[in-house]
Length: 113
Length: 112
Image (cartoon, rainbow over all chains, first blue to last red; front, top):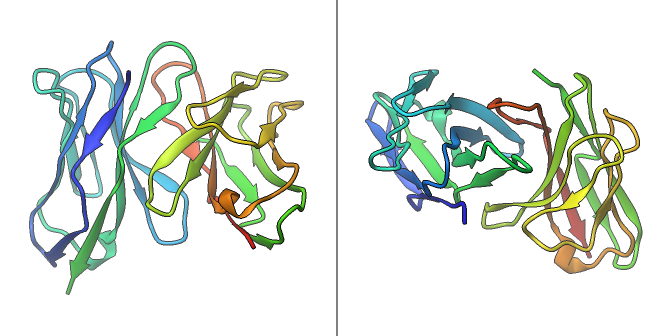
């Protein structure tokens, strides 16, 4: 079936450190891939997306590249800030059927000043 | 984009009560979804709808029910709430194609 696997947290970094959160997906079909962010007490916000192989999504200094050969969509940021502390979800969206998102388990990021 | 509204944001009720969680969106998106988020953060699809008068169950079995009488409205009902229903419930809407889904702020439900 469709699944998404992302690295477990929490991830604790100092401000201005480099961030990588790994995400891999099952390769059934050609899914669209997303990273969502959830700040404390809030719903999910779309952070970035990629809809086909080799696409790079980017937003607010975050980037992720759709790698079909490794079925990966790792999230990266060169210099994190305290305000980036949140839970990050990787997700895939199939292109047929009900088109609901399948989420990874979420990775909590804590950035310390 | 779609503005997605959920009410109430927080709800604490006793066991056996009937509750309805409201979800509405303003942009006329056809597809709407309910996800349940457990305390461990994982999100699971519990209901979805392709459009008016269309409802389907999702991946996670849920005792809740939904209705879609109007495009903009997708309420979720629990006939008799139990402590096992304590969770956060997130509503989302999306369109056909490869577009992303837009999420509401969520309803955090606690059943005592």
